[in-house]
Image 1: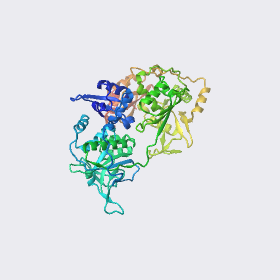
Image 2: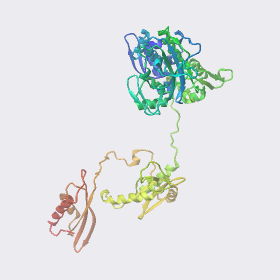
Image 3: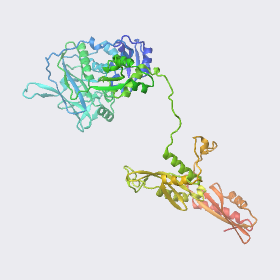
Image 4: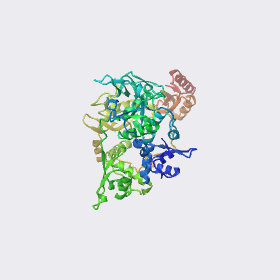
Length: 624
């Protein structure tokens, strides 16, 4: 948000120089993203207001109040300089307002007659242009000025363009009617910037007895637009549900300064001040105008909020000692009403405060700790390292899992992890795959599937025996358990973790490997590197050869390697050997696989044929 330094000075004449003020923003209020020096000796701060302070700081008024309280300097409310218009209708007005949706929390309206639409005064134009806003006419500028000044969006309708409703019992009088309601599906609105919006029933709108006039909290429509011919107007100052405003704006892809403020939640109490300032501005620009009474529909008034906190708790949260006197001084500077016994003869550190209506961010004790800390300055917090006992606390379940894992790893098993979801069980889950609608009741089923899969791939892995185990959670209808499952003598065994570790504890031969967290504990080799495996299927071929009794297997291996091509990724590996009738039989296994395609039998057979032909060239060598 852009803030004008000169605009702030109208509130706080004693404000420090712009460069110093930028540091104060950064260290106590918010981040300053940029500072621009203008030719008219003004400085424009581009500041980043976070959502927790958007309730009160998205305005010059809010920023000025914050700085004045922070620095304990004089704050001048400009409303005291305005001439406040008085109603000329002796408490009467023809305006009728109906709220037909709970998403409108307050709606204020006022009829002003005999206005003159024209250029704005120079000071108004200067204020708006300083923050990048274009002057349109005095009526629109007044509404925009109030929004950027006090943070409350407002709107102005042309009274003559609003359909009236005849008052029952008096056919000679018409009553201008504004209705705040949910839109009907399919209703349309042409916005002030000529965007055609198709509305839904979830959208909150402002309407008269016939037409949609505006999208609540977001954008006005062309139907009741103020123009050069406008004579009579209706002022709107309202408060809408933030969630409703945000959802509608997102759906319609409309993003305005009004939407930005409403979606971050505004206090309904801000409306009275905004209506007063807007009326005073128009009265200054149109001194001959006549003002009717304000219509204020406020179904549920904002409740007074109280917050309780202790100085001792605040000190612990901040990590530094805060005195009762310091807290009392801060609350007085920020004009926050409080009760505290600690400032009397009887010491006490308990505070009870009445939260200001605009400070919607103050809800719990931690909020006050943050508030007091940022006002004092976080540089006042001495960085003391807390005393921590770094001795780790042993987790009994983790210790049992480690014991079971070490036992099985020492016996040559490899650990696996299988799916916790399956096609049958006692506990069902929502939004899962059609064959994975339950949580598993055992580990055995998954372990068996894994063994089956790994047996298929055993030749590629170079394993003669597949030994795997799993430690995981199984889910019963009324509880969960951690189980251990492993294969023993071609049979899958499964038991609870407690049962397994109790057996391990009785076995004195178990060797465990406690770790202190160093890389050495994990047999880590700095030279190890990862090589991607092929994603294509492999093919296994065996070749058995009769050779003379004096021939070594290495001689056969040499012949095979010279003729097997680069499609063999593993082998030749000798897996069988026996002697008979003065000869030796060697059996070798070859694993074929490609990194870029699926190999065919034709390709493999060509290689195998070449190998066997070369073997047959040797005297007394025979392929079985």
